[in-house]
Image (cartoon, rainbow, N blue to C red; front, side):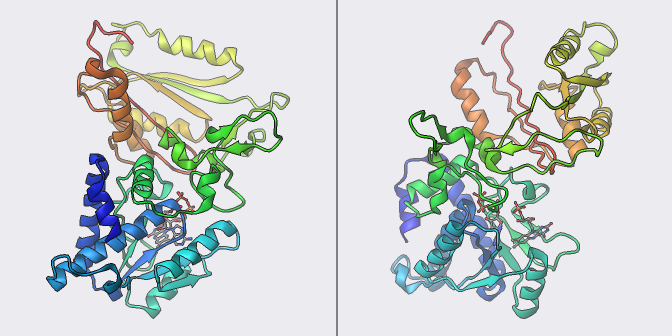
Length: 404
Ligand SMILES: Cc1cc2nc3c(=O)[nH]c(=O)nc-3n(C[C@H](O)[C@H](O)[C@H](O)COP(=O)(O)O)c2cc1C
Ligand SMILES: Nc1ncnc2c1ncn2[C@@H]1O[C@H](COP(=O)(O)OP(=O)(O)OP(=O)(O)O)[C@@H](O)[C@H]1O
């Protein structure tokens, strides 16, 4: 099986681990459900392309084990029988549609094209077919991944099925490492600078991949796999802001970058929160809060609220919850160290209803940057991908004598 062989031949240890874990999840699902009871949700995007090939490999290994043939099965003997579903939307990119159809032909996929919204389409599908589990290419960091595990029952109000997410813990870089190591064909838009693809109405190439070319009026973009910071993969997707009605028109999104039109009276408002008993009790002077306020005022922002909070998860959660929907940005500082009393991350996570998870890729980058100076505490990231905001927190701990 070409995928399994390519991974075995690769010397990327991280990729091997991610692959093995994903294959384990797939094989568990195939042991729990019959082939008729599972489906692959495929939309021609990079994540579902990874998933398709993992599923092909997982199914091959599952079949080989069942037939006790110890590797003598060939790819041709193992057709891929898993039902594939594609929700085709009128606003999908033509390149996505053609890639999806071509892939179905190449790998002999039995593809059901569904032209309904997700929920109604799944209701109709489950009425007609005995589907009990659906494989998805959802990854931590996707807005829809919040609260999901590798096996997550569908949400209340949705038809009942198990969502199986074998690549939930894969990073952007893992996705590209896999596609490139296994030489897997992918949708051509990714070579034109698109890094995550929604509809034609809300997706543009990622500005971070733009190549400055003064000789041509047409912007050029580097391929998606060259995006160095995978956390910015959705920078080409328009964000859905929900702003209070009295707010001036929000700056337009173009290429994923927000530009504030200085001619419009678009003052941004911020809340500044400090966390720490030591500031509250006056044993440490708070220099950061006042200097941040001065800085914000100097660039035309309005600070609507400042407060110093106790080292208490609920106090932090309550204040963040209170200000996050009425302000453009909530700044929070203090309490991000490794001690039990450092509760800021937990408080923010609670305010957004998400859990903390380590960001392995960023940790690796910091270790590379800092090397021996790093004391070994884990960096943590909060991925809070509601419709209105993203929060990332990192903490690095240095020995007192170290400087950057
Ligand atoms: C097969 C499948 C199953 C889904 N199951 C659920 C679900 O159980 N609960 C839910 O809220 N959304 C579910 N969704 C919807 C997705 O979470 C999400 O809204 C969708 O992928 C659109 O993402 P986008 O806005 O990034 O395009 C499902 C979507 C698909 C394709
Ligand atoms: N229109 C659709 N039809 C079928 N499955 C879909 C559809 N939209 C989303 N999905 C499922 O949800 C998963 C997550 O979607 P998402 O858009 O995050 O990833 P992707 O499209 O594979 O890659 P990208 O982030 O580059 O667009 C997909 O991998 C796929 O399993």
